[in-house]
Length: 102
Length: 169
Image (cartoon, rainbow over all chains, first blue to last red; front, side, top):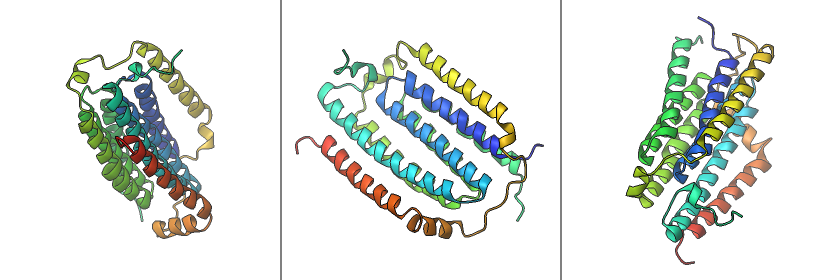
């Protein structure tokens, strides 16, 4: 069996990233769009930790912690916007949120 | 310190992560998506353990699976609509979205096939033990300023979430 190299982890991260992109681009439910963004951020984290292992230093792991902080902030603000929107328009579908569309 | 059965655990965890990732973006019910996302997060945390990053794995479980996902589940229950389950789940131009994602996947594949020699095969140098301590030293040393900025970001996010979710301020 082939030993597991950095490339293996990068392929898994790329698959998760593409799944997240598909979710962001095709789903209508805002909650699931936000969850797909979490998938994308997880793929980025996996890449950072794999590179940190490859180079033998810890900068990548420290960066992945900062990305977790970002993900938490983004989820909190995004869900706050979602609640405010739901209170006004009684819908959580992305394609009905078109007030600023020309 | 030699790892045990590394290939098996790697393939098992990554298959788990990818299959439940597919479930996240295909389920009709948002609660099912959230549960599948929790499985993905736990599998990715197992991959972190395989990469000798125990601190990041713990942060992943505590902050993501324990904190962010609870927030998601609360909001799903707050805005739960019976009719969203019966509606179309994908928007009208979903083929374009899938096409764009496929192009992105092609880009990844071509980069990884071309750049294969950039990544050393097999033997990866092991970092030393006491991972958590070293991360703490780096966070409070090299990344002191970024750490403070991150705490400020969290404060702003708390204020923003409260102000936006509150009915009247």
